[in-house]
Image 1: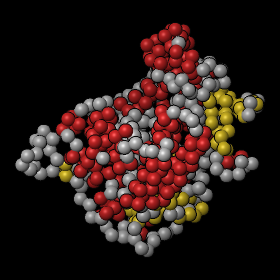
Image 2: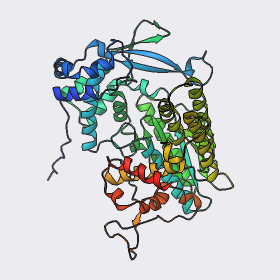
Image 3: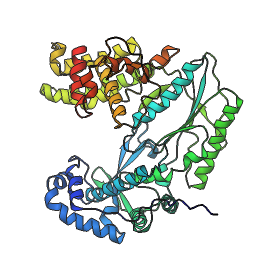
Image 4: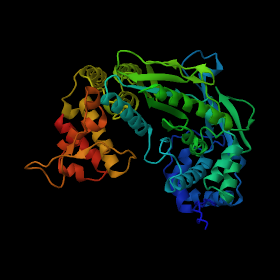
Length: 515
């Protein structure tokens, strides 16, 4: 007797209403770059109520006919210089800007497609990029937690990590292969036809120093600078985890695999996965840039363990530090290098602001610090923590310079600075992230290794104290889920009970009073 086949969920039609269009327009960033059609964001945002009816009619026609206006398919590419020799083409990053009206429609389709993927659990757990409740921080948290657990559990442990680099990943996605995969995942009918029309017949031109090139056709790839493109790329690489047996973490095209090395078999397993990924790339029209793929021996052992790993016959280079999603990782999981790099960048930016904002008000200078300098110091926390007094003092020195920049020679007392101190900011970031995890706003199991503690006389039974996970070394005690427990246990019950929306302001008041 045959078993009844499980019907795969289907997404066959996009739908859109006037209310949804108006809501999307009202939430637009008024400073968004204007596309080739020269319709500015501020016009769409401020006139949302007046324009939404007409735009809804256009969008509904597009979705029903599976056809996009030509203007929505044109991109203006602006080259932005990277580090290095600017006379060389590879040292420029192309930034594509498309129609803002088209992006309103794209955003709605993106939201429906993302909801379909999430509701039906189609996206793999390894993927953190462009997903609700996921972020760079969730990927870094998972990765660093795995590495730390391995090194903390055994003296001399090694975790070999390969940072993969795809050659022009977004630009090389074959359209037909992507459409076939989408159909396999349940996107079909008019919905699939619309995506096909979205991908084909696109054009782009280069805009530089006020001059524009002739437009040319874009035969492949998911569109960089578009709203829908990153999610389509996620769909394209959705089956990659099926060929990997070791550990894999992804943020769109950022792909990292790692394995704890206990024996030669563990080395072979990692090498086999590299070979499997190389084959997957060949079968899917992609290519690894072997010269940019590197391996790191994550360890605190005195003797390195550096076997040969290859991609397509090219031996991979070992590195002592590597930048991943904006955070500089060191093989010994210390944060000296990252703090030094970010402190230097923050100091340079602060110097630039000081030279260009002389005579401005304290309010303007404070905004400049909060938007330009502070993110360089604290980005990625609580995935990483300065952990040592020396590193914390380096960060404090930059913030003290910022206080002089804002207030002049005489810095007011902490209660009047209107800025959290560095220690207070670190605790605030930890507590806010933990609160979001507990509330389900952030998709990270912060309680995986944390357990309820013993109840002592005088404890609040509605808020039992948490027990820190076991840690054998200082490294294990510097991980987020260890030091956040003490911070969480110390906050008042009212702060634990408040909503996620209320938590930031109440928590700032708490840490300000405490520090």
